[in-house]
Image (tube, rainbow, N blue to C red; front, side):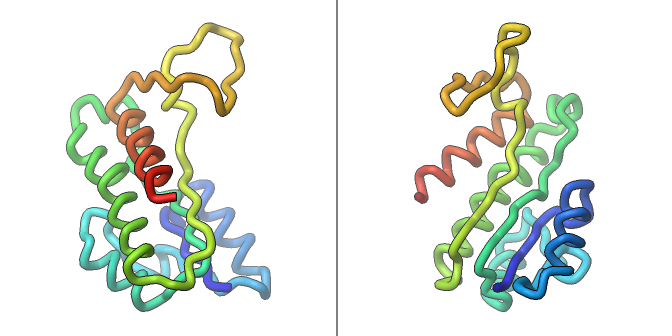
Length: 145
């Protein structure tokens, strides 16, 4: 099974890449092997079209919450539009796709009462451009489902 991991150079991505690379069931493609810029749909199309992953673990993102207030366009471009481009490339070019997983963030829930746990039913109240882009990406993927 072919596995594409975006954000493979990040903390979680490094560990998942190592974990799955050691599993004979998976052929792992990660940013160290595949160079893909999420702001370049042509590049995304080329990677998806060539590798035809069965599973996409989409971990790549601009994650600096405070920085997103100043650089909201770049954060939105990578975190929302990059996710849309990756998902749409798989829809158009990849008949093998079985699973697309987006790593989101607890930031999508914003400010909640102290001590109240988040659940799938918790209302999202994003309080930063970073979180808004992540909510938008989640909604887009739900729309595609």
